[in-house]
Amino acid sequence: MPRSLEDKTPPWKQQATSLEIILHDTMSAIEASWRALEAWPGNFLHQRFDWCAAWAVASGNGLVLVEGRVGGNVLFILPLEIVHGRGGRTARFIGSPHSNGNTGLFAPDWAEHLPGMATMLARRLPPLLAGRADLILFDKVPAVWGGFVQPLAQMPSTRHQNASYQLPILADFEATLRQLNAGNRRRKFRVTDRKLKALGGYRHIRAQTASEKARLLDLFFAQKATRFRAQNLPDVFADPKIQAFFHGLAAYPQGASFEILRLDALVVDLPEGERVAAVAGLSRKGEHLLCQFSSIDDRLSQDASPGEMLFHLIIEGCVGEGVTLFDFGIGDQLYKRSWCTRETVLSDVTLPITARGRAAMLAYRATVAMKTAIKRNSRLYAALQALRRRFKADDGAGAA
Image 1 (cartoon, rainbow, N blue to C red):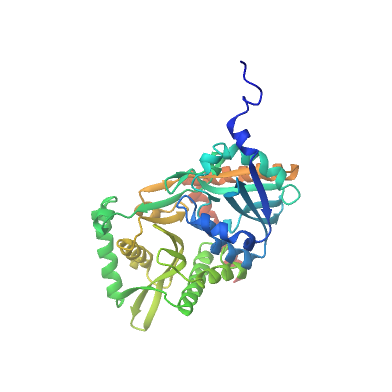
Image 2 (spheres, rainbow, N blue to C red):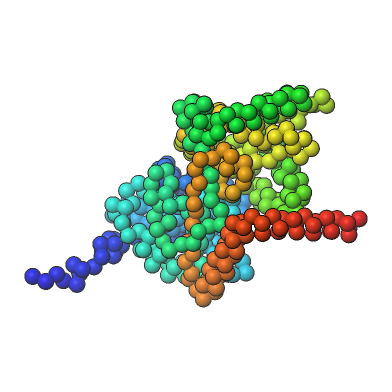
């Protein structure tokens, strides 16, 4: 007996008919489902409810929260915000400019219900968001996270210009260092230790109270502003809304294996008094500890390497605290490569909704391709950095 046309329908199309997609404008409407999904290791920490709530309050951006249900069970939540720009309206992950990776929120058994999830979402999301956005952007998506395949990464995508860098934390610190050049790493520590002790000694502290966190955050903002000015770069933390966002994160209570924003610092005891020589902001979800940002006091001798020492002490402290992965986050920098054995490639998914969105997609892809080409060409990158410093020097001479 010949199979009917219905029998020939691909399984994902048959299953997609039972998928109900609901759009929400407020986080509170789906908070319980959100918090249940966020615990799964396959969902990145920057899609946590508290992280997104802090950004939503500080930014004031409109939200569109995409909830998918099968048989009454929540299968996924895509927490998106709408931002306006020259290319029109973009629906992107909440707080994406300051995230180090994005996965959305999926149930652990999503593949059992919708094995064709990527194809289905690429087909159904654009018409659903018509009238709200011109372009859907899922950026910085890892192909695999927490040992699980990511459904969004299976959509047609382009490689993000930056990767992120991680170091597995093993049973003890010596075993962790042996993944690297342990002898070289220990020599660096001894040299830095001697230099910092010669200045008067040093201490690694972790902020415990709200006032301590606020103080270290403000010091970070000041140190970073000084560094950006010296490099003739825009200060991505200067916006009061951005600072309010991080202060909001720091105010959240912490759990034993959950820290939405932890503040660590290296304090140097100089003859004239103590000085916070380096600051690091970290977020933790389960066994994953991520460095969200870091800074150093430029008034201290660069040879003293306070930032390097702070990372050494933080990573050493991970042993015995239940952390199995230390994450330096996104961006290719020499100090990250010196510490990390794992590089996570990230991808950008762009789904145009309107003609304006298609133009914005092409412009976005061209910009990413240009940045990627520059960063992969060390001579060109160095030349551009030198040109930037020259323009800064010229501007300074003119102002004088």
